[in-house]
Image (tube, rainbow, N blue to C red; front, side, top):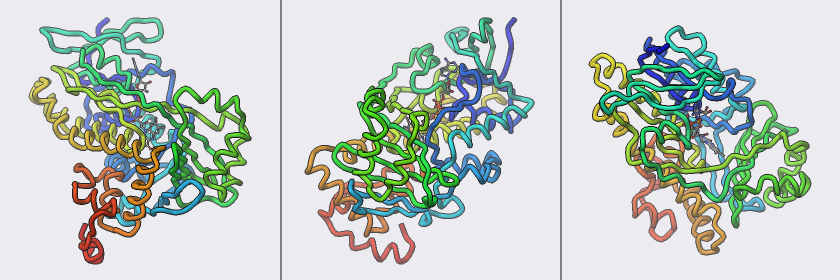
Length: 423
Ligand SMILES: Cc1cc2nc3c(=O)[nH]c(=O)nc-3n(C[C@H](O)[C@H](O)[C@H](O)COP(=O)(O)OP(=O)(O)OC[C@H]3O[C@@H](n4cnc5c(N)ncnc54)[C@H](O)[C@@H]3O)c2cc1C
């Protein structure tokens, strides 16, 4: 049997789920194929940046996230290993109402989206359903095939969306070449407890060392610790006490929190990769999120960008359906709108990786100097903050700004502009 739908989405992750919900709210007939057996249950860190909050607000979900599973965080302190504070970034400086970071317990926002989709009549969300190939007619994509449990399913669709992550099989089937770079480091994530709830986030940088601590709901604290890709098992073999000692050396004041690591099940390893592709569209098909442009998590924007992709595409697809035009040329309007910010964030995240975990003393000196300049320069600090918050499309610094940030040029306008609220 051949089924028919308007839109077929492969992957119900950060981007695919948002797209499905946004299309459901427009009454567009959609099927989502997800290879996993159900909603994700594993440990993962969740920071909703202001642009992600905007997306959830547009979908009517931001105010409905369970209060007991979320925490608002305003201040992020950047420190040297050992504890010396270099710079504080305060989300309160951003325009309200999205002038905060929202840290949730694992998968909270994602589950809220998936639960809402399940109640929408125009969307069918199918788990255990893996993409196997594309249907083509006259060179254009007109549907796909999936394997649902053991059955092969054929679905005709006006547009097929590849929202299937960095190792996208849809991208492969579209024969879109991808430059997939796996970084030599990934993150060990842990969900720990604080006797007195943390309210402000801390981020430690040192010689090949990065440790982030983000307050989560209740008395929970996320720890993000950079380790070599492939070394998670070795870290486990060395034992919990050895890991705790490494963390205590980085932030002695948080010893009590680190001591609450009692079981490796409180941890997970997340590899990191970057995807660059020459195009995100084909006749009858589109890539969104990590399938199109995975980025290093330093930007804290990968999932947010997948969500914004989804909303941008959801705004374009009704017009395609109304005009019966699913050509790459028309779908490219989505890519044209999204690519500048994504490319900028990919570059920024790579620069941050280079500076933040350097072992080179000269680069480390410059890094610390930039942090200290930002601490005293409201104009440059705002540029960085609004970029991380997902509110800027342009790079935070031009050449002169870089020289000022490195302390090589004075920024006479910064104080006056900050006082007048001009950024
Ligand atoms: C350590 C770490 C920290 C991060 N921190 C942040 C952060 O703070 N903020 C942020 O915004 N982002 C962060 N990210 C990035 C974020 O997790 C991803 O960018 C985001 O999940 C991308 O969404 P996506 O929908 O494109 O892909 P995914 O969320 O990976 O979803 C892809 C989906 O497709 C499904 N799938 C794959 N293949 C198939 C197939 N053949 N058939 C059917 N289904 C398939 C998968 O099961 C999955 O559900 C972080 C990433 C890492 C590694």
